[in-house]
Image (cartoon, rainbow, N blue to C red; front, side, top):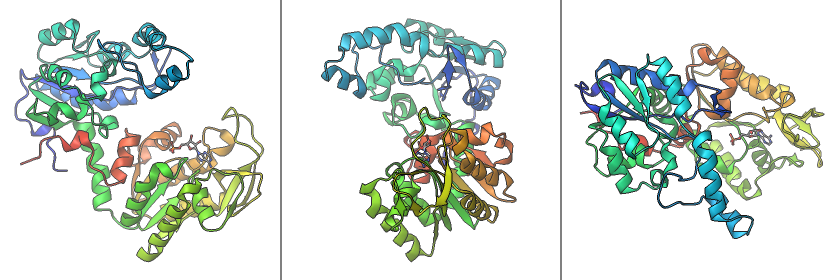
Length: 435
Ligand code: AMP
């Protein structure tokens, strides 16, 4: 990695540092239900505290309305409802202003951080308002101020210049440690640097680790290199499939995505999830694999049911059939036992493995076995670099207790997929290069 990290900055003492974190943690009734993202941010924050920096932390939480902005903007979903006459813009905003300061506030994160960091964290109840300005100005060396949810301002996602200037006025040095939002080009993730408002812009330890493991493994994989993709739709992963096919030796495709490939091969896939518009694309990828001498592995057997379970974890009657002979009125919802074995063997013989996306409807215990089998195979892989690219697959590995047997579990699903696509992430591209 050629980007500067906090370790490359000579002197933080007395410097005002703005750290973009990813504190978008799951919450239920005001309680944090998974604090992994907070824990992941600690090494950078603790390092800056030890160095005597005056630290301003910022993050988004969820997808709120711009309730702190003078000009309020509606999102696409709201606009549709307003256009359909179901509600009015005023009613939407009034409700958001009432609910969101409670539901999507970062105050619980500040409280937890304060416990973890020995009482050195204060919370500002706004972002660029009087409370934030006062608290940032009063922040002493080795202390932190966490700003309220950045996305309470529409200006964050729209990269508003005046908003960026206000954020930049809080700091001499900018640190990006929010890998989970590094694929977004927003005010606090990239624009503040792109507009030339801060000269020293470096990454924190979390981004450094994500890049070192994932980017290096993609650029210089030890072979055999096996990539596994799952999840719902082919359309969401077009560039990932194509790019990985070029880099890996074996590309395994499972999950809902597999049925479009199976249909492209002439299989009968019943009522399984199929993206008919992408059949030609799948044919192209099958041909590409062949011409490059790459192995493209699809499920050989499939767990099927009459209907998609509703609710998703409802009991479901299943049986297993050949994945190209699914009866017309049945749908494939998980990979079968033979496929689990086949995929596990490939993983066991690999030296580099990356995985993104579940192998089936893992939210349902009857349909989770395929995803569990792949997670288990990664955990059991000996002498291989194993990487899980965030999202559902990361959650599966963590829940199953395999986290410490996997080389790297990414904190960013979307961001790691974009890395797998071969894209340069805006939140990383904007940072200073090492000399
Ligand atoms: P993604 O967001 O694309 O990674 O997709 C994750 C979702 O794919 C999960 O909610 C799974 O339930 C779903 N999924 C996995 N396999 C299937 C399948 N065979 N049919 C329908 N949905 C699936």
